[in-house]
Length: 139
Image (cartoon, rainbow, N blue to C red; front, side):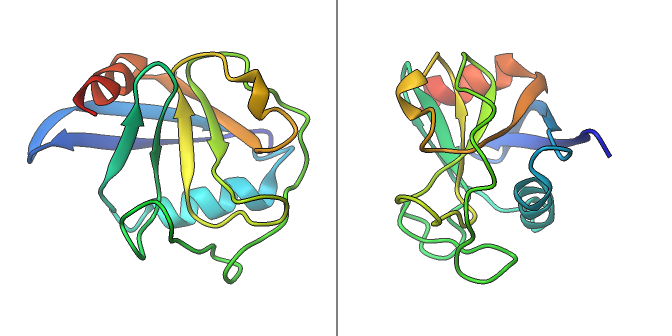
């Protein structure tokens, strides 16, 4: 397996705004990609955006950016840091330090190279970056 393709349908205030297609780098990050894929099937809601930086989601336990858990238990280790935060569209894991990956993730809306070596880049937006940009503007 080299990569997985999956998508999110995005709505704001119940109104559909479009679809984001992701390519997950399952060959280099099999645990991280499977965690994201499996947790994405629950149909969660709630993304937070930071203008000029990223859109973050995946806290399905506390809904405030402090919760979440993985399909492997509470947290799991970083697989590797081969991929970098090179620009808009990068899909990466949110964490609270080494070995603390859970369910939270973020989509970069700009180059964020200060996150390299700290957050696992495991995919990218393949189509629908305009939807990510719209989400970012909604805040």
